[in-house]
Every structure is written in C-alpha cells, then in structure tokens.
Length: 325
Image (tube, rainbow, N blue to C red; front, side, top):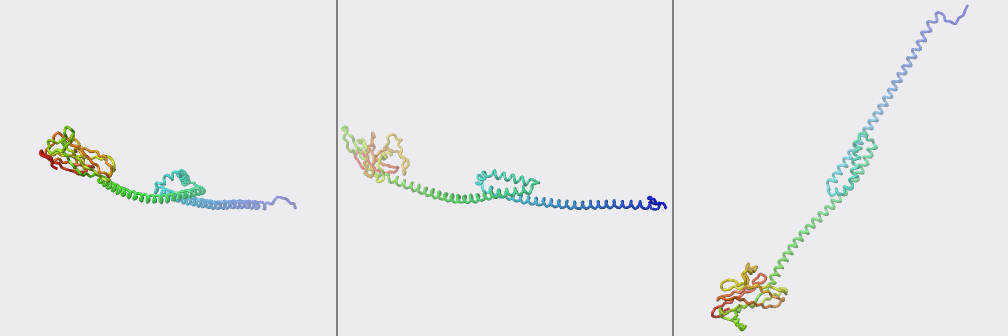
C-alpha cells in the first residue's frame, strides 16, 4: 500500500472554510473591542469636560460674587467720602493734601472693577485698597466730628462775644449819654454869674475930669460895670457879651453885624465882646464904656451873656432934666 502527504480529495474542501470563519470572528472581536474602547473614552472625556465646565462655571460665579461684593464695598466707600466732604466745607482745604492719594486709589480700584477678566488676586488687591480708603475716610470723619465740635464752640463763643459787644455798646451808649449829660451839667455849671450891675452916665470935661451927668444932652458915655464869678470854671480867659439897647429899641453896635447865638433867646446882635482873664473862685470886676454922639432920653437896657446864657441885666433911664435909675 502506497503512503502520500497530500490530503485526500475528501479532506481538502472541509478544512479551508473553517479557517476563514475563525479569522472573521477575530476581526469582528477586535472591532467591537475598539468600538467599546472608543465609547468608553468618549464617555470618560465627556465626564471630564463636564466636570471642567462645572468647575469653570463655579469659578466664574465665585469671581462675579467677589466682584459684586468689592463693587458694593467701593460704592459704600465713595458714598461715605461724598457725605464727609460734602457736609463740611471747612474740610475741603484739609482734603486737598490727601486728594492725590485718594484719587489714585479710586482710579486703580475702578480699573480692576471695570476689567471683565479680573482675577481673584486683583479683586483681593482692590478690596485691600478699599479697606485702606475706608481708613482714610474714617480719619476724615473724625476730623469732621472735631471740626464740628470746634465750630460749635466758636459759634457759642461768637454768640457770647456778640452779646458782650451788645452789652458794651449799650453801656458805652449809656456812658456817653451820662458823659454828655455830665458835660452839659459842667458846662452849665461853669457859666459865670453877674452881680452888682451898674450903668453910669458920664460927662467928660475938657480938663479930663469925669462927672456923673443928669442931663442926656451932656452925657458923653455910659459906663457899664459888673462883677463876675464862678467856683466851677477853671482859671483862664472867658468871653462876656454885652448887649445895650437904646430907648428906640435898637441895639448899640459898632458895625451892626456882630451876632451872638444864645441858648434860650436865639441869635442876638451884641454891643461888645469883653474878654475876661479869670482866676477860679475869685470875683472879677468888669467895666466897659458905651460911646455915641447923642444919647436919647429914655430907658437904656443892659444885658450880659456868657456861655450862651443871660447872666444879668439892668436898666438906666435918662431924661433931660436929671438922672434916674
């Protein structure tokens, strides 16, 4: 019997299909495993992406919340600053020295808050600057309280000073009034008094002798004499005014233009102004001659004034046949 290595006709057709089927199953298995791996990776990656998005959303939410808090603190600080500086104009001068620093901090804080991509670190920096700004505002508030207290004290002192000024003005007015009254009293009290008033008609002889004359036609002059004295008036010159009125009612004057302003009788023409050198407390005799070409028959009235007041008067009557008085 002869042996050979070649399969028989009956064995060859069955072995080939079995091998092909095994390869196909292996390929399918590999594809399925790859597909499952891909799906697993996709599911894993999707979960990771979701977690990342959630984390990012949480971070963004936290940043927004922090930014909102910082913005709120900043707005509150600005409101306090406006309230402090606006309520006290006296603080404006003091604020000028700190204005640059405050403005710089405000600008930097605004820059951070306006940055949409501001980080947590930047927000923390802004919050720190706001805290520093609030400290400065607290210092300003303390200054306002101090200035307000000082202002109240000044107002109170000013009110007191105004009242004291009013009282002083009232007292001064009273003092001035009393002083004026006293001055008037002294002024009136210093007015001289006149006594021993005499009017003597005189006939002057060619020899120089003088004789009292009874006839008006022979009278050359009227000699007016009187005494003055005052215990209040100080020593020194004093002016006496003499008014002599003739029987026709006219005042005898040198030029008719000499006028005396009296305190009780208005303006009056006067005959003569008589300077008297007076010594306080002593009686002083005064004498003055009245001359004119013709003396009228009738009454001659004599008035003496000092300090605007009439201090004495007398009347002398002349007739053709004699002397009366």
